[in-house]
Image (cartoon, rainbow, N blue to C red; front, side):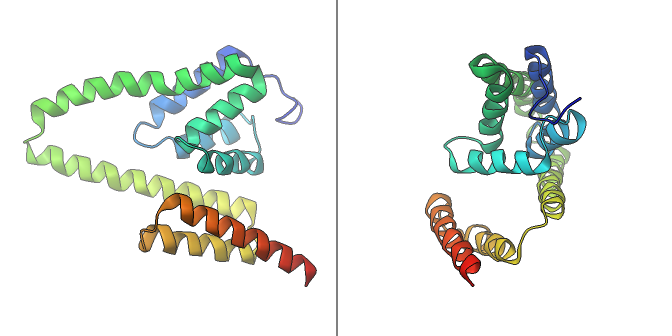
Length: 183
């Protein structure tokens, strides 16, 4: 079977895995992407997946789409990257068109509004649950926990702009890590 980085992944497997992620993760693919890539297919370790997701976070575009491109490229080059993106986008596009048509017809129904609010709450819970699972497995250092908390406060509570906040905290975390190694 080999380590995840040694294993060959076919183009068909890439497309079908990302098709599944796109289909299951409609409304938020991050929890499903980790489940399929790390737990189900075992293509990457938690650490490798977190690293790709982190890189995807600072690049323009959706972080999981960026990770899909990097994973597709890792296993099948540029063609794999294209297949991963197409797989991830195919089902959400089909489902979105169908749901938009249904919503246009039933948007005024109070129960539909309640269902939309409930779905948003469930999606938030999935994101939080995935973050906790990843944090537990990665065993972050105290410094990483401090910067995670600072990020949450700055972006989540104070609503500071994402890019300048991430860049500032990234620079400070590098300095903090270097200082910690000297001590």
